[in-house]
Length: 328
Image 1 (cartoon, rainbow, N blue to C red):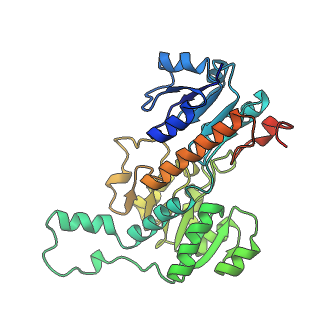
Image 2 (image 1 turned 180 degrees about the vertical axis):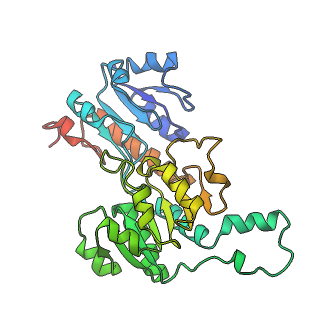
Image 3 (image 1 turned 120 degrees about the horizontal axis):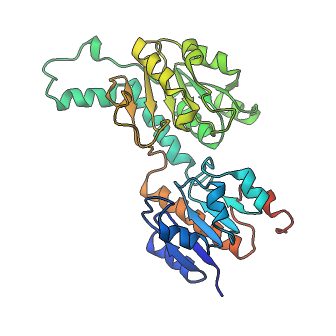
């Protein structure tokens, strides 16, 4: 009897056909809630999961006694209890590399749009308020030649830094990462402690994974160290930032502005002041949201789950120790 896969994120017809050629597939392309009775029933028979956006709790894992492997259509794994999965011998795979450049594009677009006040001034034109040459009250600030501080310097952070250093002649500082001499030579980057980065950067870009150590890494104290002219960019996870402290810093003029693709609660709450603040560019978590990249991420997940359920090494296992000894 063929193994069963439970898919709960949109896959294209070709990807579904790939899975159905070898497995029984229960497909929930628009899953509203993991409490859906049909979903829970399928979970009880699933050997593999493929999807994203659902927080897998130990209780959900208890409802999946046959589960062998999970292919997440994401890089971040904060929706998964990794230690618990490893303890149960369940392999988790993710999609690193596939979305690096696209997410870096999003990050740099936030740098540009906040610095040059693109959204605010586009609205200015749309409202019909542009009736004379603009004056200093509408001026933005330069990006080229400024200092870009990267809080986190993994694949995506490095890609953002390359855009800044090689495209805009920016000075690169980085913290919350191990020293990377090769990149320092390539980009002229310098490793430093977080406090120094915050004090010296014109743009502070957070791109760290969400862990107990990075939760609310940037709060009132950290915003207090930043320059009044500084712009804060977050393309990591909303919980990396104390959002109340960010709102206070933006309201008081402690920092000049913020470009945000992620928030503490998503979708963003209707009463949040952030999208109505003129010095904020707020996006609906679009980091990897292009047709090309989302298709590639889903394909990586399809490849991962097919390989795993065939007993072969996936392309990108996250907790390989869960299957210690099962791979050559």
